[in-house]
Amino acid sequence: MEASIEDYKSGDVDGAHEIITRWSQWRVRNIDNFNKVPKQSKPISTSMIKQAFPEEDDSAYRKLNRPAHGNAAWLSAVEIQEQKRTPFATIYAMKNISYATRCLATAISNAGRLWSCDLNEITRRALADFDIDADWDHVTRLLQTHIRAISDLNESDYAVTRQDRQPRR
View 1 (spheres, rainbow, N blue to C red):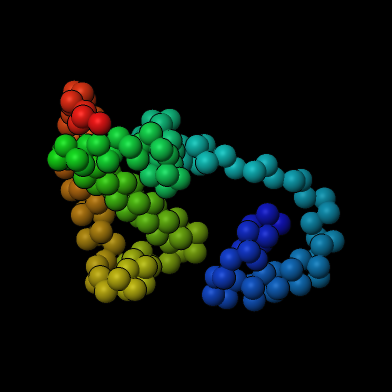
View 2 (view 1 turned 90 degrees about the vertical axis):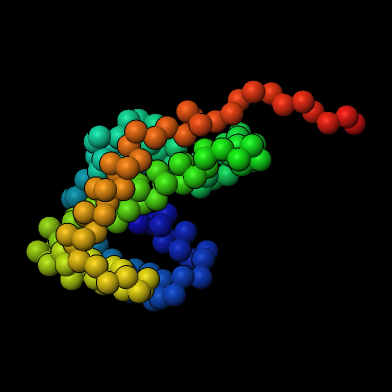
């Protein structure tokens, strides 16, 4: 929590400073309640992904990391494939969209289970900002269709790896 608070203090997230102040005040008032609670270990991203998506292989985090953190080799490969007009980047993007949608579905499902809420209501509220009117069943059906559609696609199968002649310098 302390590291997260410092991270938010450095940004300008609406309402974050108020939440931080309130949490800090609550913590000071309740510190005695937590003296005997053992310190929790910091979660590891790869293990969290594996826990949420056991069907993913161990490379899921690395694959998601490449575009998010601007991996130079990955960006170069994507750029070259775009210049060669291959569907490499499109397939990669479709897989990331699928993953992000699965993350949303998992969050909705977990929130519903945690607070015994209606999944349809959570779904409507989660999608309201995007002017999407859909219920839980609709979202899960779309997600399953999308996953089936891209499951057999491998972006590497479409990459053109032949060396092209370089222009004269």
